[in-house]
Image (tube, rainbow, N blue to C red):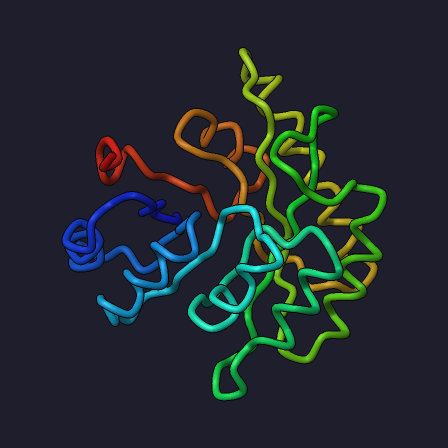
Length: 197
């Protein structure tokens, strides 16, 4: 489970960590970097927002995971900017699982090429895939994009890529995601309550 802590206070994050949560997700680089430096907790920080080119340095320097890599250009910047003293940045490829593509992501047909590119970068460690599907009204509708992502991960694993992590599912569709093999669901409000404004 990944506790989505964006827009929540350092005090709330400290309390969650004290309760045993070890993985926290943030969407906004500047906000997250301030929190990470202020807290200095022995936890894993995951970047789960869209990655803009001008934000890669902060992600490379302060996070343990980046969930939303969808272009070779971004992957290269993250690898180049990863400090030498840190372990490789763990990376998930964000895949576009719906036709609208409003959440971004690499097209499924291009995921293998991106995975191959990431595997060649010295300061990144490819670990799996991530998606944010459009809301669906039924369990079957919720499960379909997650199933497609899992099947894509299986094909990439068969081709030799590490695919031990599937980041899929949030508070509204976590049951469907888990049924389709999610290893990391992203939960915010259910843990922290309403976000700070």
